[in-house]
Image (cartoon, rainbow, N blue to C red; front, side, top):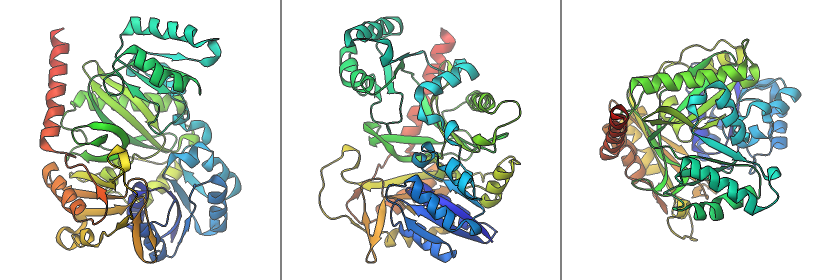
Length: 465
């Protein structure tokens, strides 16, 4: 019997719980959850574990839950980054016998975007865009910093991205063409509000196609999973504000249609260099956990947009649902420092999220939020394991499900090709009843072809020049 502590926020962790429960080992799940998620609640009960709701996922209460069951827990898995950035692993491993699969506080690299850029600059400088950091302590007035910012824009051009140093869950990040169209607008609406809180990065905007690459580390070995494309924008054809992610896709192979083999090799090399820089020559168990790289393929090669210390949401659902290895064994090897190559079925996966009407700036809605996923779940009779339904930001009240404020339900379609995987995912999403919406263009062939054509043009221009 293997006991697992899972710290859960939404659909990402419902997927992780599902894959853990499918192990050949007998597993007991002890889930500390943000809400009364019906999927997690059922799995915890079925496996003989326990489900507890901790609405703010505060470290103190999670540690108490781990202490309560430490004699039954073999290891823990952290889903959301919040508790990790507050030292969850450090506390649990200091106060219990439970080993956590997530970095220690000092290695939670998303705590500072400035430090990320510095690490990349030392480990693999070509993976950084041109950037400059502006520190409030260096300036006595806004006029003074404005002169320096404008001088920097004179050097690299007005097409930039502005990022706060501290994590802001996408808020505070401004990009030329998406959020502002002049240096004055950039400075007033994005630079100043961020600068009032701390250091600000101004970096050249990169043109290309984005992809996510999630690695698992045991502190010495860094093992990749297949590349995934995430759809961050709220509305179809990549319009509207950024969200946590409206859906994603993975192709049959480990690379995406718009990527070259060279892109894949370069992304792996960047990951290895950054990991090696942080771990040192002998490895470092403090790094144990996930390293998520947000990459962009450009005419000049692969660049890093961001690094996180947790599985992507929704990207984890694209890769774990086709993992051939027993995930519990993978976790145990990660704890022991013996992690080896991971194996994935040659299948495409498409994730589509159903979200509340008022999520991502779509519409105002203050009415009731009942949700019924039973019709979607009946599709298992038709598709079997080729469809997975993972509830997220919803909870059970008196036997009924109600949507909360964030992404409500994810539906994963699994098939031999992207078109069929997309069709399965959409069929499931359309059968969910409630005041929800979704994007219809996740993995749409025309959308994929647009990305392929875009990269073809960029590479052609690069060769000509």
